[in-house]
Image (tube, rainbow, N blue to C red; front, top):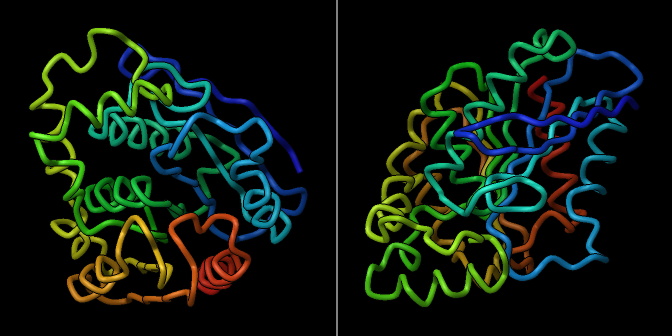
Length: 251
């Protein structure tokens, strides 16, 4: 497996990523993994998405993983509409890369990263398919203006909002979550394939969100509810098996 560290300049911010190319060439789709909003201060013992990347690459799928602004080693602050610009720039980069350009491109998003994936894919035909795990239909709890200050304090404590003067407009920052609501855009993924995966016991985003998205989406579409699974799906082997089988079947 070949590995390449990538740094992109987006809105004057350094957005960092990793490109993994399997040793064996194939016609399988390239997969761009989009993480969710960090739940807390990073755990140095958490392998993150590394096990998922290894699993995908072991089946000859090229993989690109990166940190949205405000997360990991990328610069900036958590800004959900900024995340959409990050993903657009990543797609631009991957589409122009000789090693990846001939592949189809699938977005594999988790939670807020899944929401961003649907939003961006609805507007970009270069995305050939979307797999959305634990995706909210809308950010109801995050879009309540009266509770925004406590939410911002939480994000500052865990380090995803780093600059003292950010956001410059609390209302504009909060409205970004309202604008992003996947329920407004999911129908535009069709006729490209859409996979929705959700845990039946998701403690953060009710499985009803997935059912609403599925009802709104066009065909082809698939909904898989994982019994007894919570919100964090990247470590669940059943989820990885489901996503991998789906990706390979849509090569």
